[in-house]
Length: 112
Length: 111
Image 1: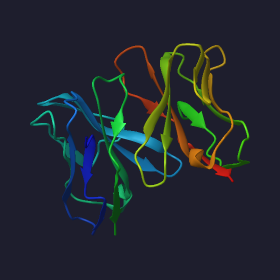
Image 2: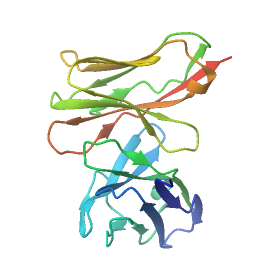
Image 3: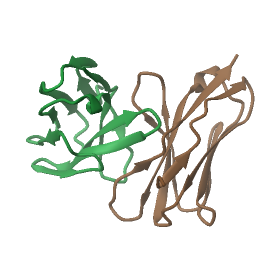
């Protein structure tokens, strides 16, 4: 029972590089989301999706893109990494927006 | 001012103590209240889920909501070293809006 799987666990980028953080869930959840967690700031929503083909912006979407081509996968793309994007990133899924959120184990990203 | 305020701690207590964790909020529309527990280098996991005002108990954990004061609490009885984690409060209005998280309180229970 895998739940929410995130890869990679750690990543170091140089300013201006691009990369994709992968997220997959095997619970047939319609709702998926990406958060970033910074010291003293709590979890802040980047982007979310209420189903395949439907995405929307959260609180801090700038610098990030998402797509949802299947129910299972919800990748997060950094087009041109900046030091301000150094953070821990969490993917989460749930049956609905107000249902229990299941989180992945996180990706620690450093942008130099 | 943040919508949800949470004392970051750190909070350190001896094993067996009663722990009180708190959040205050400013948005009177919040109706669903949650507590998540996050162990080091792990994702948060849902601990308690309550709707509107009142108390909810689950084993050693009690969640309390006081909407008139815009204040929620999580009590941990007979605390154990395994309770050492960061505790995050989260809340959302009755409409289909996103969760707003507190910044988390780091708790250490000393054996």
